[in-house]
Length: 238
Image 1 (tube, rainbow, N blue to C red):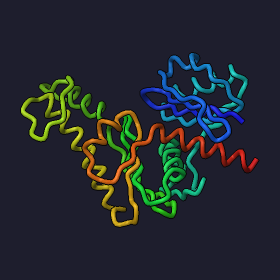
Image 2: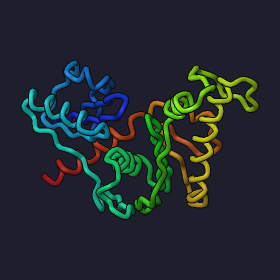
Image 3: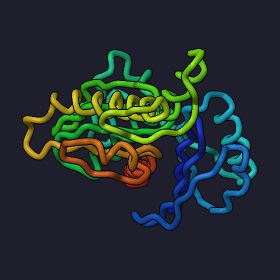
Image 4: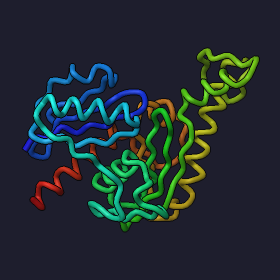
């Protein structure tokens, strides 16, 4: 059965068409151009962190296709993952999907990092327990907040430098150091586990990866991988 997996973020919508355990196609587009997505499917499984705007757009799109959308929501346990959040239902669906995708792709203890509009850094043990994690602004949001909330700091692009000597590079370097530092500090919690690894995904992954000094795998569309795993489990139970 073909399944259209949709990951609706704050900046863009990522999608993948899955059939028979393999991806047939993947892509990304702005939410306003959702109708340009021509891939047909028998099921639509989605997660959304873009609020009512994202939910309404996807539901309207699904209705036009004649296929009811199935929404992923965080649970206490699913697909071999147990949810250590105090209130499991409050965990973002994208984080839950990324954890499920990580568990499917990597059997050991791992740090699951998704770097988009926001950056999430989540600890997953080898036995599949999500112990908790961080949410911090993404790289672009960090830069934008400095420009928006200070009188003299510019929004222009800079480059990562070990010792920045201009303001543009100081901002770019500060944002990357803050993000890489948070990731590496969280990794300490699982560093002693055999084969511990950081699984890094999201639009900012290439920018962040080169400044991390820990075991690392960069994975495209980790949220979509989790959605595909959920879809496959549901199909096997059905």
